[in-house]
Length: 259
Length: 201
Image (cartoon, rainbow over all chains, first blue to last red; front, side):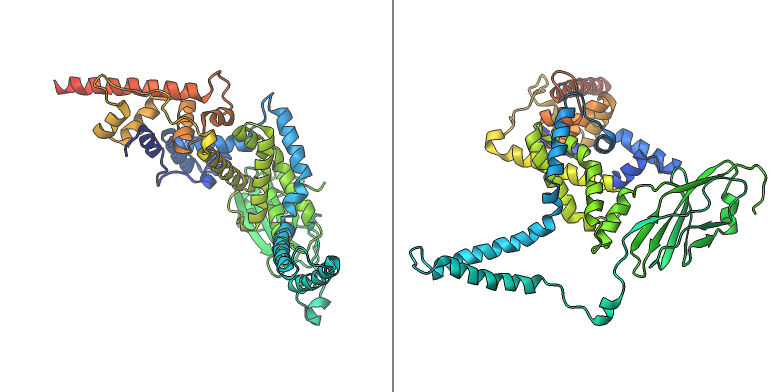
């Protein structure tokens, strides 16, 4: 190492003990247990690299434009919205790459078959070749024909919100069961119960639109403490097809005992 | 109960798995719409002008779109997006710095020499170790000074980009922090040398 620049670069090199982005995210969101948080805090005090990463992540997550940046950010955002179709249409652009390849092939073919001064009607030849190329592209990109049995099954459902969640709001007694509206094509429902800081208390699965809470979970539901829960509907292949909003409830009655 | 919007990770999951759904454009537009301003701001601070920033932001979203299926959901989508944006923008700055016409001056801002004419940092390297320098930095430098040093020396970002990225409002921006950091480190090195000399007697 010869230069001051190299030395300083080496000083800031990542070490094995350095925190990755997921850990920094949890630290920022205060989702770590006190022991882990203390360990991370100590590391961050002594590691300029991780402290800088944390500052950049925080700025990205919650930073807002300064006075002279607002107009430029508005302008860039408008440009992005205008270009959105270019961005999300990129799968078609990938197809475009294929089309560009074909265009190049066409140019090579045209120049080799029909030199510049050829007297052949170019438009007729172009139309013929386009038919050939177009046909090839069509058969190349066409989806394979499905067996009749598969075609006969119902199409994929549009995803949606699961509604009809019970319990929600203020309760007089501890709930023994969670339930929701049924989603057709759902094979299983995955349920999560957590505290307001997103600490998971319990999770379970049910094949029907309700699930009984185990006794030890019911006992964890403290009077006055708000809890949240949500449910996801999965199809037979385990794909999520619907999700509920996050519902919350609180047992406000000081009387102990479940219904 | 009124319907609540899907969170980012749910939108990604639906978009990735529901390949035949007519709602896919809505999901992706919703997801990207939530982050356009954040990515725009970041790219503006990196590039310094809105035209380049718009191109840069478009490239970021294109990259995200192409790689969305590889998002595993073990971090938040916003953290993953940050990682893509950060890497793309830092690479952009590095590639721009390599272009001869836009090359930043290689000459150090401040050259710290001790009375014997040896560069203080080289002396540190010989006499002690990187660990010692790290320790001095932690002791002597403020939070912002350390961040500027990391971004300039490790990430090799130009000073004007660091000024914008950290929203430094002082007149000389990041340059002032580099100068003050070097001055503090020089002072600490001299102090350390003196105490070492005193200990020998």
